[in-house]
Image (cartoon, rainbow, N blue to C red; front, top):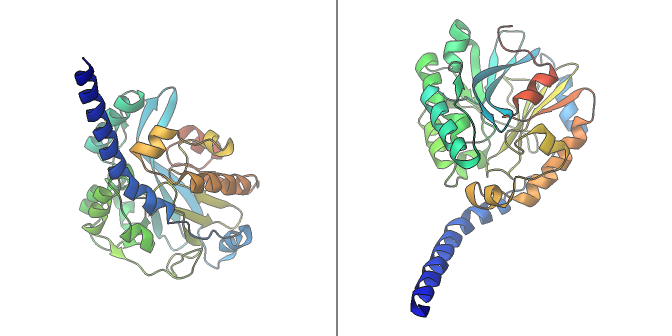
Length: 300
C-alpha cells in the first residue's frame, strides 16, 4: 500500500513539475513587458488632432450567455470624415464562435453561441472603406475572423501593430499571430513612444500594455468631445475594472499566464481615466457595459 501511495505521489510530483516547466517561460515573458504609460493629457491630445475621427461604432459578431451575463465578441469601427474606417479586432466566423462557446462551457458554463455574421457580411459594400485594422491582442477569439475578412475584403488594409505584439508570443497567442502574419494585411508604419500613431489615421493611438498577453494593446480614439479607450481583455467585465478585481489564480496563473501586478496597475490607471465624464473605457467582452455607454451599432 505504501509503495502504491509513493508511486501516485511521484506521478503527481512529476506532473506538477512538468506543468511548472511549461508555465514558467510565458510568465517570465509577460513579467518582462511593462511599457511606460502615457499621462491623461497625452491621451487627450488625440482629441485635438486636425481631421480626427468623427464617430465610433460597434459590430457584434457573436455572443454567449455565461452565468447570466452576455459575453460579446465585438469589432469596433472608427470613422473619419473622408469615409475611411479603422477596425479594432476581427471577431470570429460561425465555426469559430461555436468552438469558443464550447470551450467556455467546459471552463465556466454557458449557453450556445449566437452568431450574427462576419464583419464582411455585416458591412457589405462598406467593408471596402476599412483601410486599417488592429488587434487588442492576438488570442484566437479576437483574430480568427481575419480569414473571412480577407476573403471578403482582399488587399488594401493596413495592420497597425506594436513590435511586442508582432514579435512576442506564447502558447495562447501563436495561432492568432500566424493567422495575422499570413493574412491579406500590410503592416503600416508607426511613430511615437508611449502612444503609437500613423498619419493616415489622425486621432487614433496605440498604447502597448502587456499584462494580459505580451502584445496586449490599448486603442485610444479621440473624438472632438469624447475619448474612447479600448482595453481588450485587461479585465473580463467593466465591474471587475472599477472594483479592481483580478481573474483568479487558475485563469491568470495557468490558462492564460498574465502579469498580475501589471494588470492591477492597468486597472487602477484605466479606472482613474474612466471617472472623467468625457472618457469611456470599453472592455471587449462585456456587452451590457458596452450598451450602457450609448455607443451606436454600425448601420443604425
